[in-house]
Image 1: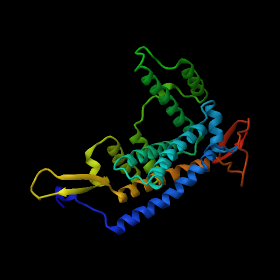
Image 2: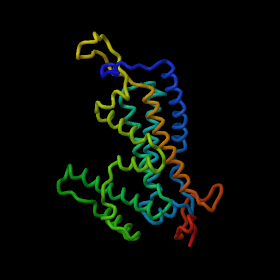
Image 3: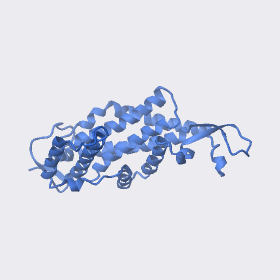
Image 4: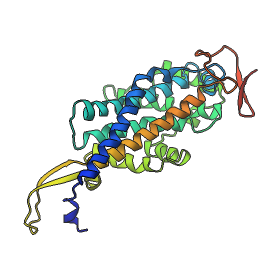
Length: 289
C-alpha cells in the first residue's frame, strides 16, 4: 500500500458495527466500575494492604491505590459519557482520556506487582517522594527560591526511617513509559505499551500515529497533486481496540487490588478498618504477631 493509499482507508459497515458492539460492552463495565467506585477504598484487617498501610502511615498505600483507580475510571467514564451519552465522536480527544486511564491503572499495578508488603511500601513511597518533587517544581514557577515543603518532607522521612529506607532509595524518577512497560510484562498486558504510545501521540499532536487512529475523508483527489483536500475523522475500530486495552488494564488493577485488600485467612466479608496490631508476612499468609 502506497503512502497515498493509507490516507483513504475506510471501515466497512461490519467493522463499524463490531467496533460499537465492543465499546458498548466496555461502557457497561465502566458504568459498573463508576457506580461501585467507593469500594476501592475498603481494606480488610489482616490483608496485605492493611499491613502496608501500617508501614506507611500516614501515607496509606490503600488510599493512593484508591486515588489512582478513581482517576482511571473517571477518565473512562468521561469517555463513556462523551461517546454513549452525548453521542459526540471527536477525532483525538478520546485517546487523551484512554491514555490517562492506562497511566493511572498501570501505576496502581506497578505498586502492587509484588506480594511483599515492604516492596509495595517502597514503590508507594517512591511515588510520594515524586509527588513532593513535582510540587516543588510547580511552586518554583511562581517562586524561584521555593524548595520542598518542609513539613511534608519531614513526615515522609519519618516514614522512610521506619522502613529502613532513605530518600536516596526512592529518589530516582521513573518515566511513565517504564512503569507501563514493567506492568505489561508482569501482568501479561502486551498491548498496553503500544496503545499508550499511540494515545500519547494523539494527545500531543504527533502525526506519526494518525494513520493508525484516524480515517481520512477526501474531497477531491486527482491522484497527482501533492496536496490532499479532505479531513481527518475518527476511526471507531481503533477507538474500540484502544478502549478495550485501557479497560483490561483497569480490570486487572481492580482485581489485584481487591485480592490484596482481603484477609487471606477469612472468607466472605471482613472488617473495613485495619486493626491496631502489627502484622508480618509468614509463608505468604498475613497473620497477627
